[in-house]
Image (cartoon, rainbow, N blue to C red; front, side, top):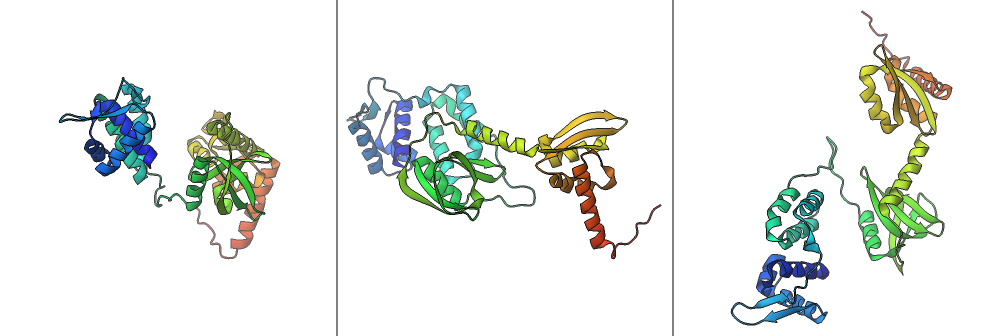
Length: 317
C-alpha cells in the first residue's frame, strides 16, 4: 500500500539522513520513478523533505524532523520483533513488511531485531493435521473492521442482520466477531455466519472500546456458564493430568490421600460431564451429583443394550 511506502520512506530518511530515490527504490522494491513520486508527495504534504542537487545530493528531512517509530530502545525493538516475527512467517505480506521495518531501524538495532524475529516460529497445526487457512469470511470481516464498514449476514438460520464490526478474536482456531448492534455489543462465531456482505454504511468506533477487555468479558461469561453443573469424583492420583486435560481449569483438586485424589469437575450440563467420564469405567467414581450419576447410568445402559449380544466375556486371570 502507498501509505506503507510513505511511512517506510520517512523512516529510511530519518535513519540515514540523506537518501536518493534509487536507494529508496532498492530498499522498498519499487521503481525509481515511484520512489521519486513518493518523495514529492511527502514534500507537497508539508513534511520538511527537500531534494539537494549535486554529486552527493539526495533527499533529506530538514531541521531535525523525526517520526516516533525509531524512538524505540534496543530492548523495545527486540521485544517488538520477537512478537511480530513468528506471525510474519504465516503471511507473505507480513514478511515483506517486517523486512522493511528491520531496514528502517537504526543500524545498531538491526542485527538484534532480526535475530529476535527469527528466534521463534509458530506451527498452528495439531499433530497429524494440516494448518487451517484464513477463511474468506474472516478476511472480509477483517477488512470491514479496519475500514469501519457495517456488514450483513445470516446467523444460525435466522434472518439477516446488520452490525458494526469492532474486532475479531482467534480462540484456539475458532474465530469470533465482536460487533455493535442495536442491542449493545454482541459476539458471533464466524463459522456460524452465512452470506456475509459489506455495506456502504460506515460507523465510528467507540472511543472507549478495547477489544481485549471486551473479549475478557465474553470469556468470563462463558466460563460462568461452564460452571453451571459440578460433580465430585475420586480417581487414582497419577491420573490427574488426564482429568485436567478433559476439564481444563474446571477441574479443581479437593484432596489427596492414600494414592487417591478427590476433585470437582464442572460443565454446563450433567450430560456433558457424564460424556467425558463414561470412558473411565470403574477407574473413576462419582461420589457427589446424582444428576451426573444418572446420566452415566443411562449411557452405560445404552451401551450394554447395543453391544451385549456381540460381546465376548472378558478373560480374567
